[in-house]
Image (cartoon, rainbow, N blue to C red; front, side):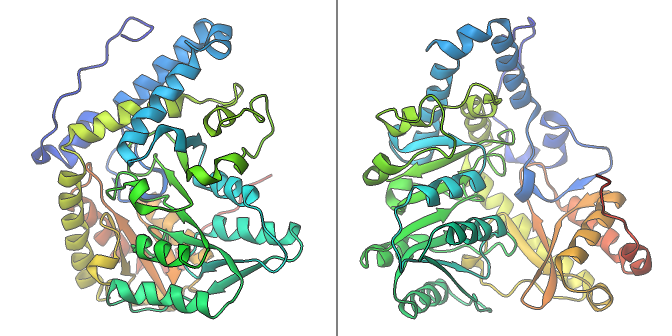
Length: 425
């Protein structure tokens, strides 16, 4: 029961036959005549989750002191959410803490690890930009440590190709202390076989930090089996959570020296879980609705059902777009591609008449958004690519919309170049 007396409609099983536009109408809000093919950036929150979040907001405002000061308020609800999430991710609740996003998590972890002069941190050409910047900043303020980056080579024909590239980079750079791994790369949707790389690194006393921003809700995850020293993940992308809802997994042997970035009242508590209790002055309700998000995920049949359907939809959409645009899909094999995301090269006329850079990618995204659809455009390996994504509200009709609008854009290059993306300060 909500605090305003209304009731959320009961959650029932949602059959796969209702996925697509029927589910979009029933459970989500979206601007009319719009094809959202980009769950991989900001996700999409079901209305029932927003309602559950609003109920917590109203409860908090009825008695803020009781909410923040005493265990029956926010604290108990927070630990309820952590318990459910730990079960979903295959770890003990004491190994998980909640943070605002993976970027916050990466910086938290890097500031907690003890580095010595001569230590190196390994990234690669597909590392997420915010992660790269976090490493770069740490190097600037920590005397004697170094960032090493290697170019991830395409095509990737099998998982062992990826594994071997990491091994060669590490063996060629003595002194690697930490390896930064993307479970799924953001701009290129490459699925990294993280466990064999982690095991190989641990045999050499190398720490591994996994950026799992795209994993929860898209991949089956058992954090204890993966075995990373630290694993960071978002819940807003694929698990239906409100934005500002992420987690850090910390191996027990690292608990004692892992601390929040901001020094607050709980900073010197004895346990990891207590040190990371959320601050009272930010809105923590995205964390509190994690159980409801997992329930919604399960109501669709769970990951086995979603995985099979979304993977097939992305594969079919990739092939359809590549044929319509006269281009190609990204050169990685199916077992090395994220199940819910894939890349297609944009039409040649656009690539030839716009610089292959981030600014052009932004122009293309704005042009497509104004027309009524969204995918991420990104430069990679000498070309410009459209990253499409699929979740339960998407259907093939969405990618037909993208197909047709991008073909329209091939006749509008001059107008695209004139798009103003600046903001007045």
